[in-house]
Length: 235
Image (cartoon, rainbow, N blue to C red; front, side):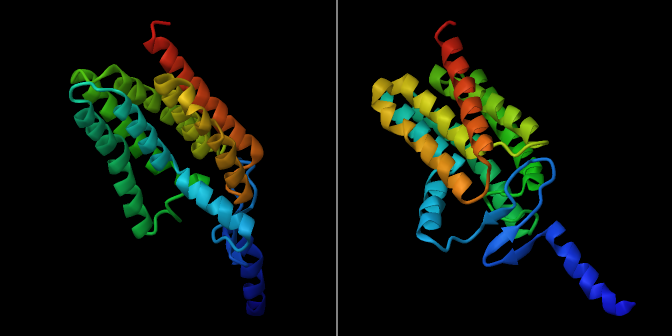
């Protein structure tokens, strides 16, 4: 009877995840995601997708959009307020995520497993909310308060959806930041539009999301920031 135990254990491995040819096979029940997330690229296409995904990571995209926004305005104290926003909404959640990775609580900084996203999302939501409160009470420039408020709404909705379905944070952030920058610099932001489908392709190529999860992220990010810009301009 004991000789059957190794066979039973082997049969149960796919449920929890095994590594085959540098690809992690996972089953994330309820998220309808593909099951072979590519953790280490091996082909040229995978390497291209990997670096597009890294360069299009939500914190980096948000930071670049913030810098483009800040340099466009010559408002007193805008750099100070931008620094406060970065600290609360980006640095604090990132430090927490790094801590989780080092403690082995999550697989990686990309949080490719849906069930590991809840804690980091809660901290990110708290940081974004704290940034919005500080910027609002402190009388920060309207464009930064707009960014903070939209970020809170976006993070909250993505978090709620993620409880049941693995919507793409990458495409949601890329789409939202493109709308924000477009509202600031106009048609000069047109080249940013192409980054959205590129990032979506990279996430699907790496099997981190399905096609529809990336589309849902795009739509959500666009809608939230379009509504925020519309309200900021008086409706």
